[in-house]
Length: 398
Image 1 (cartoon, one colour):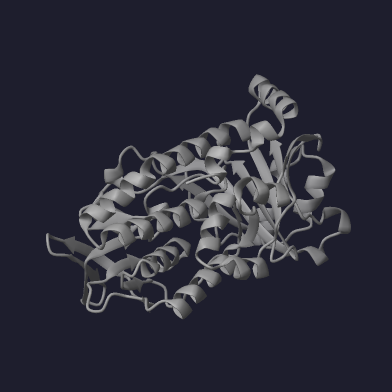
Image 2: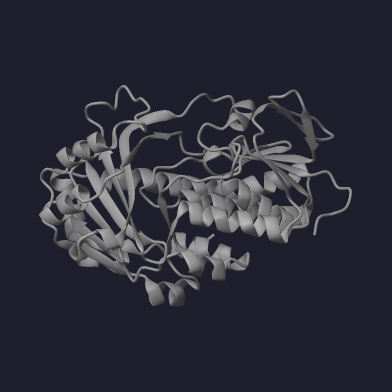
């Protein structure tokens, strides 16, 4: 439980990373005050993949049973050609992942994982959660840190963690490095009940369709009852002038995606045509981490997308935020709520996060390759199979 009378750790952001940070800190005996700018805790309707490196942490936090109630556990990762439909490579998950890494490979709806973390924080910790609390600034000195709220109030604490996402206000106060930059890649996302799909289109594995300048990923969520589909497309027409098209007419979004997949195999085209309610995001990014000072300075640290946003081509964005939270909790447990603790946390996480950022960037080129690079990729995948697709450095860590 929390140390009586101790100055709290302030957490800005109530998403997956912020709640994970609050849980990990509370488990280390540090009092927590979390501030979320929205009037309610919520997550967008999209799925995420959780490798064994992530589910292992969730197991350590006592969330295994809760995760099993909402997640799906695919038996395979299957890589296919988007045009020909042929299998390029496969990786066994299921029991093999548990035997090899001590934890399963899971796929889950973001809102379900968020809900598990929220419930765990509320029922097993003394962390104080504050909604409808936008912040306008932070101050720190040798004695502590202070959070400035939009209504003029201030909240003092010992340390502060910015887990407020890609457009982090805490990051701008700490680093002042401006806005993230557009990548020219679009993410079309949809989630649909499997029972509404033709039987031939239902899926209980992770399937990745690789095409020229695009790829599509599908996998089950909600114990396999729903199918999450995401198409990553290089935006040749609009990439130079990114705008917020999340409010576009959903039918029009579907038509755009169908045009991008005009050369795809009939099965993939049928899947896209059978889904309504697409949402669209322009993917943004920052430069890869170069030093621990970009994750912590003095009494302020960054976590998750606020520290190291990454492209979704390694399916580890949420995973790295959860790993960050675990490392933060370990540092707090070892050294208390001091600036040296945050420096130790940043050093522990910087290189691994940078490696994942770089690998995701590299995968973007490999997944969307054309010409000789594509031929070489397909040949290597067919020849090496699991040896190429398995990632012991990632799944066996941190």
